[in-house]
Length: 163
Image 1 (cartoon, rainbow, N blue to C red):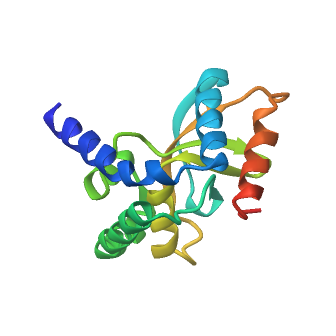
Image 2: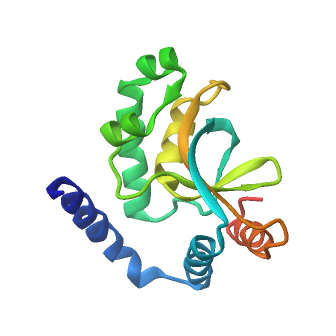
């Protein structure tokens, strides 16, 4: 329990500088995360292709970008092991890049949008670019087919310049 408390406190301290730079997109993102958690009809952990995951927001702020760069270096140190396994389990993610949440996604069209764990996804994708068969454990939340959330997620990604 103490380890998770330390991780949470570290996460919180890293987020404080970002608080002064919050804008409309950040409010929309927070709203989407809350609604996804509320509207999901099911959720489950499963392996998905790393190349099939897209970020919901860019990592363009100092603390988030710094954390992503640190994770790139950690994953590079373990690249051979991961490529050999072909899979990054939740256990390995927590060992290499601990976080208070899983990588959490929703399925949209033909890919998964990560709404939690964006810096881990970005770091993994940078290190394993070109490795098309690497899978990673993610939590997939299922939304109703007629949910307006899917359109809202797409619009937010467009606002961030990701689509």
